[in-house]
Image 1 (tube, protein in one colour):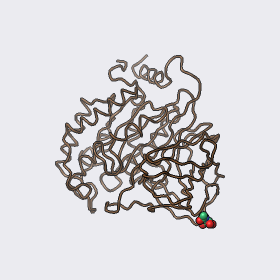
Image 2 (tube, rainbow, N blue to C red; image 1 turned 90 degrees about the vertical axis):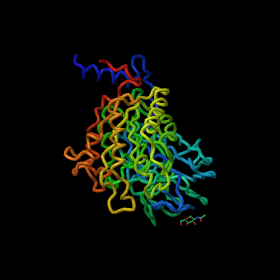
Image 3 (cartoon, rainbow, N blue to C red; image 1 turned 30 degrees about the horizontal axis):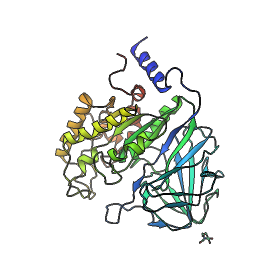
Image 4 (cartoon, rainbow, N blue to C red; image 1 turned 60 degrees about the horizontal axis):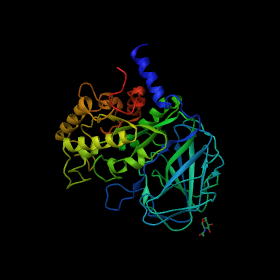
Length: 414
Ligand SMILES: *[C@@H]1O[C@H](CO)[C@@H](O)[C@H](O)[C@H]1NC(C)=O
């Protein structure tokens, strides 16, 4: 047997929980939109959501990565300061299908306490891999919007009254932010697992085509679904490793968005470019740039937490950004001294990282002739975020065996 075959065999054993694995189905995370606190009016970007909803239905589309015979949804009041009253919620198997009502302990509605989230009862709605569901949530009373996911890259709808069971909404307005829905889990075969991708706007899909599921995680999900592996996107635009800003830091949300998700076997970490670039810009004028040692310590802390839970953790080099965000108030996002830090961090990731493996996404996207820049074919045009072709190239650069190996560094077969 050659080396590749050996590695594949190991990976499959690891994924299926090795000999004696139970055949009982279990719940596996199949989709996520990581919750963020809604920011106040002074921030650079509009929130894209009303300050409050009342007697309104919010409908959104979510393409799950793996299907199953039953599903349940996770609704979040993570950053709410008062209880969130859900009057009704539903799932349609496809856009335009008749929505099926969800229940919570047998009731159509639920009260979610401040800082809490809530899983629905299991809904016997069979789904296929990569199926785009529609989830609707009706809120009856005055509902301040304090928790959201800003960069949905997907059109969502706000409609008057309780239209949670309507096939087609009437009187709706749209937004590209997400509300209420934080995750979708499916019941799946015992050997099914998830890979979580923890990241920033590059993972969240900024500049990927709207409503087209062109995030790099969507392309990765298409590759992994035939193997019974889900991919869940824990990207938050503007997200940072060490500091809060647009969303909590990766360190602060690692437990909730990664380790607490059911069925997680691996996590991919692609975060840090905003740590390097935000300080001094209109995002964070008075903040100091973290040092290489501080960034390394942050990655080490993630690796320790993952290992403590038996979750494999895979790093990724930070992708090129020379000339980023031209013609915007953030045109100082890139500077040569920031590039020096990115190169130092990437060199360390390639040679001495604390992770079980590292995916070289910098190498996948850079221009070979000018390696501090993204290759033009992969660039969305803002020199920071990949376009659809770049997102696809990132997913194709991943050796799938690297994602599925064992969770402790140093035990891979030679
Ligand atoms: C809720 O909205 C619907 C649709 O606009 C309206 O018909 C209904 O009267 C409203 N209910 C309350 C309690 O305001």
